[in-house]
Each structure stands twice: as C-alpha cells, then as structure tokens.
Image (cartoon, rainbow, N blue to C red):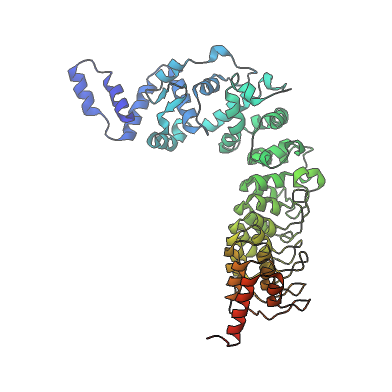
Length: 502
C-alpha cells in the first residue's frame, strides 16, 4: 500500500489527461526509485517544511524505540542551550504529517503508524544515512542532553518519572536511550556536551529516574556516580579518553573496570587495560566498591556472561586471578570464576574457563564445580565437566558426610538425567564410599528410592557386598528398614552374581 500511496501522490499533481498519461509512463518501477522521487518532492518544499520533514524522517528511522506523537513533538521543539521547552515551538500534528509526503501518518490512538517500519524504506534511509542524515546521532544525543538538563529537573525532591511522563513525555526516551546515540557518534563531536551533563545532571537522574539493567541487580545508592563511572557504565569510550587527561581523575581508585566488564563494553575494557590506564586485571574490589566488594573483574564478567570480555581479561597478560577464591556478601560462600559460571548455567563460559591451561578445579569452598552443577540441576554443565576431565567426579567434599557427586545426586533425589550422566562416565567409581563407608547404593537404599536402586544395580561394576562403617551391607539395611521391594531386588541381584539364577 505504501508504493500505491506514493504513486497516487505523484498523480495528484497532474492537471489533465495528457499530463496524467505522461506521469503514469514515468512512474518508477523500483521501490527505491520511488523513494528517490518522493524525497525530491520534499526537497522542493520551503526551507522550514523541508527541514522539518528530514528531522522527522531522521528521528523515526534512527530512534531506538518508536516515538509517539507527543514525544516527537517535544523532541523537535527542543532548541540547543535552552533551559526549558517553549510551547510556541511545538509543531501541530497536522503539519507533522503534511510535510512527510505520506511516509508518516498518525493512527487513531495518537501514535505514529510510520511506514519506516516497512523494511524497504528503513533499509533505504539506513543505506543513505551518510548522505541524508550525516549527524543524526549527534543531533539526537544533544537533544536528549538538553532536555534532561532543563531547570525543572535540577530539583528532583519527590521526583517520580511516572508523574512527570505526561508533562514531560520525552523524558523517558531521552533518559533511557541517549547513551545509545552517544556511542554511535563519531569522535570529536559531542564529548564536551556529554561531559558537562555527567558532571552536573547525571547524579540526579541516576538516583531518581534511570531504569537500567545494572540497577536490577545492585543497589544504586552504593554506586559512586562519578563522570568516569558513568562513562564506563555506558561505554562512552571517547568521553573516558578525555577524562584520562583531567587533573584529579585517578581511575585506579574507581570501580570503572568492574562496571565496564559488568555492563559489557569490550572497547571500554580494551581502553582500561591498555596504556595509559593499565588497570590491574587481578584487583579485588574493596569494601568501598559497594556491591562489587570482593569481586575480581573476571568474576564480574563471568557473572554477566560476557564471553568476549572474559577472553580479553584472560588474554590481557598477567592474569593471576583465574582461580581466585573470592568472598562477597552477594554470595553465601566463597566463589571462583568457574563456580559462578557453573551456577549460572553458562556452558560457553564454562568451556572457555576450562580451556585455560592453569585452571584449577580443586580451589573451592566445599563443593566441587561438578557438585555445584548437579545441585543446580544443570545437566549440560555436568556433561561438559565430565568431558573435559578437569574435575574429579570421585572427589569427596568435606560437608555432608564427605560425599562425592554421585552420593549427593542420589542423596538429594535429583532427576535421573544427572544420575545417568554420572553412571555413563568412565571416570565415575560407582562403588566409591563416603566418610561413613556408604556407597551411592547404600544411600539410595536408606532413602527407599526404588528407582535409583534399580538404576544403580544395572551398572556393570556395582558391588552390593560392600559394608559401611557399621558393618552393614546394603541388603542388611533394606531388611532392617523394612524395604521389602528393595531387599528382593538386592537378593535377586546377589543370586545372579553368584550364579544361583538362570
């Protein structure tokens, strides 16, 4: 329908049958040619209308989120270096659509139903960005910063974004997305504007309005909210480069490396690990680092699953914190990078860490990585750890009667999937005893778990004659506990082993 609309718009200029026929003959056959012709018509508008049309096209084509009418009206009305929005500069809805040559219409709900959502025109504008919208991200960034710097936002006592949304509709978009546009800007363009904002307004927005991924996990009140912190958090590499040369800025005393690896900006991590920063990849965050207290940069990256950044940290040279056992209030026990990856069920990161020649799975707090994977019911991680062979499945942990992965699996009554995975591993000693002298079969019998007993009895190496530290055989336990079905199974299995049954 878009193409038909544009063709009809061209035909509307005809004045008689002859001009109609000539125009029909000249109608573009290719959709991009149609867009070229449509923009040529826009180019013949008056200066104000032409400028407005291209501003609208740029905002709709390159905005991160769809803008409704009121949001776009405010965005277009903002003037540089102003302290408030002048209502007489707000353009009416009818004018917004009239200058766009049918590329933009408004639906009945007051939202933009824009044909830029059609992939062909989106591709067209993206392809010709350098020609048609060379400074679009710089324009959007400065507009957002100006809006957020309005005087009204300097006093934010009792500030609530939802209360302000109707009166200041562009606040939500600008506060959420200005950094995306800032990262898309070229070097030497808007760094000073950004730095001014970070040094004056950013603290208020961080405390009162910003709704970001980081704050879903940690307490915003504990964050140091300096310009360097914000630059690292938002991946503003060019701004950080300016901050490095500022007097009194000591990045070594900041948590910027943790923030950069946590939020996932590889270019920022590269900058912080390279001269002149040369930040310590092995540092352990002090208590003043708030929620990162006790973390290493590697653990922060593993926690968020940023594989590219994990590789950069591992390959940066001088990595000594691979096996670091870190204490943090965030976890109830000390953790390593590997144990964090296991708990978060991140197979790719687990493989990446296991590929390091100096990985040491014996450094742990109680649980082995394999037992952690089992306790979290992560089947695939269990398989990976067994395949790589760097975590002994028979190793006994010091808690829970000194049991190994198989003992814990049976004792916790976990799904049969993990039990089968362990039993199918050539490394697994099915008859390994815990500190009480009990095998996995002892434990399954004590728990009257008929299913697990049947599974264990099918293992070719199973030995039902082993006695525990109290000199009780597995059969003795079944009889003593009154588990008749299990006792019968054990008797049958023993008979077969002794050749008493055909």
